[in-house]
Length: 255
Image (cartoon, rainbow, N blue to C red; front, side, top):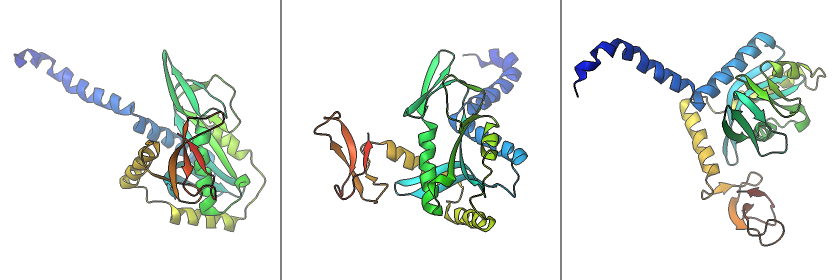
C-alpha cells in the first residue's frame, strides 16, 4: 500500500484519532461513573453547608465478604445520608421490589442492579462500623445524565440536585455535634485508603462474588457459604448458597 496517498489527510487524522480516543474514554463505564460522582460532589459543595453536613467521598469499607464502595456519605445531626450516584441517560424503569432496573436508550435496552438494593449493603456496612440505629441511616439515590423516570419511584430516588432537597427535608436532630465528629473520625480511620490499588481490590472482590464457583463467606457469621440444591417447595431443584453452619446460621443467597 502506498502510504504517501494518505499524506494530504495527515493533519485531519492527527486530530481525529485523539478525538476518537477521548470520546471512547468518556463513554466508558468507569469514566461516566467518576464524572457522575464529581457532579454530586460539586452540587453538595454549593448547596450543603460543610459545618452542618460533614462529607466523605469514595469510601471503601471492609465487609465479611470483601469490601463495599460508597460514593458519598454525609454525616449530620439530622442523620447519616448515604448517596449512590447513577450517571445514566434515557428512560429508567424500576420499583423497590425489582432486583434489576431497566434503562432504555433509543432502541437499546440495558439492565442494571436496583440501586436501592445496592445501597442497602452500604447502609449495613456503615451500621456495623458506626454502631448506629438503622433508622438514622438514610439511603439516597441520585440520577445524573439527563435520564427520565418512566415509572413511579420512591422519594429517596432523585434526579440532579433533588438529593439536596431530600437531605434537607430532615430537620429533627438525632445526634449531637460531638457524636457527628466521632463518627466522621471512625469512618476516616476505618476506610481503606482511596488509591488505585484499593479500587482494583474492590473490583476483584466484585468479580469473586459474582462467580458462582468461587468460595464466599457468610455475611452474618463469616463461615463458608456452600452451593446447595433445594429439595422441596416452590424452588425445588434450584441452587442457592447456604451457610455451612446450618441450622445454627440460616443465611441463604440466591445464585
